[in-house]
Length: 171
Image (cartoon, rainbow, N blue to C red; front, side, top):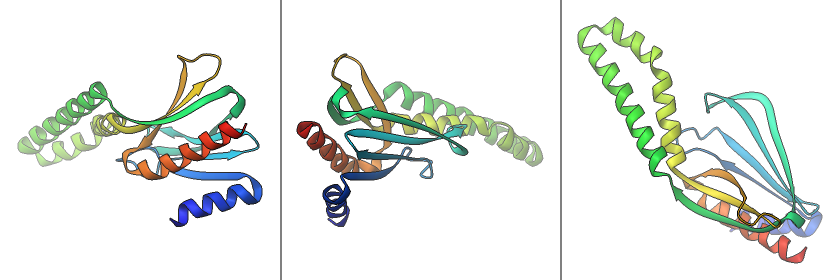
């Protein structure tokens, strides 16, 4: 209730609405900030190393509302991404368990050496279990910009989608 009232109060005072969303279920510190102001939707996202370690640089994109016909939020279960994540995690766990059974020191080395498979598997699982924010272009109806948002941010994402659609109708 307070989030929605803060957003609408902010919209009335200086016509700016800001939301911050988690991008991943497994890496909650990876966030994307979106704001709606001056007839533009602005998306600010940090660049990351290995999908999880934030680097100091930002990706900033602006989408004028005049070029957006509709905004939708849909749950997109990515079967291929989910299966790839399961396979990568399975590969990682089998390598680590097999190496720990033979030698503890080798097992500990394998944990660090093959941690890329763990990170990749968690990233793929997260992509498979995410909501997608679709920004549908006026001119190219079949082409949409997609932004992945964590599964747990569903209510907040729907509030933001409603705010954007209201602003599009006013525009």
